[in-house]
Length: 137
Image 1: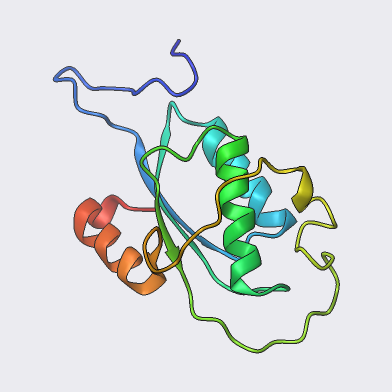
Image 2: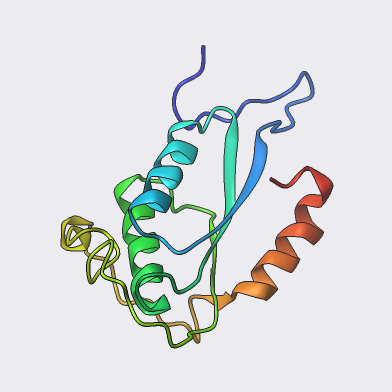
C-alpha cells in the first residue's frame, strides 16, 4: 500500500503512474474529474491542465482550475494552459462562476497572469504530447 501522492515506481525506480492532461472548462463536472485524478495520485500524475471557456469566460474557468488545484493540494508540477476566449452567452446552468456560486469557497490564490504564469492551451497540449509520448491520457 502506498500513501496518497507517493510515486509508484518499478524495480528500477521509474515513476510508472499514468500521465494525464486534463483539457476542460472547469465547472462542477470538471472539478469533480480533477478531484478524482488528484485522489488517485498513486496511479495517475496530472502533468498539465488546460482551461477553455464553457458556461463562463476562460478567465473564470482558469481561476476555478487554479483554485481547485490548490484546494486539492495537486498544483505542484502541473503545467497550465489557457484557451482562447470566445463570445458565448451563458445559459446560467452552472451559475455565474461555473461552480453554482461556490467558486468563492476555493482557496484564494494570487491572480493568474496569462502572459507569465500560463501558456497557450494548444502549446501546452503539444508540449505534453511531445514530453509524455503515446502513453499520455
